[in-house]
Image (cartoon, rainbow, N blue to C red; front, side, top):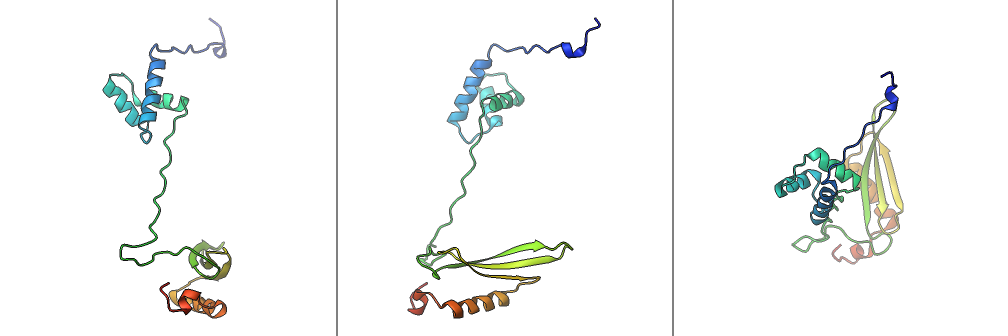
Length: 161
């Protein structure tokens, strides 16, 4: 026919049941909020629809449906025996937190950091850097900070921390 291929266009064939299927997908997705398109496709096939997962996925994308992210479970503050796992800071120097960070230098050798933070003021009390940080290093730094800053009032009164 001597016609350029760029002039030919594909004619999209729309199925007659597309609107009803889309409504069913949206209804099932709102009814079962944590389910994805594959499980919705199984429900549709159980209802008698003749659909495959690719078609359901296409409708799912067109309608902008998404599965909400799971919220992380919060850890408990107290154990069953009444002991304390974490404390909420009430004043400066009440609760400190420490954490190790790791990195590598340009030549690939490990580098470790020990950061100690006051939970109430968010002040960084200390950062120690070294190739190896051991438990003795952590205890030495905490002892040094206790000497500099003193114990919290609960510790000095002999109360339960």
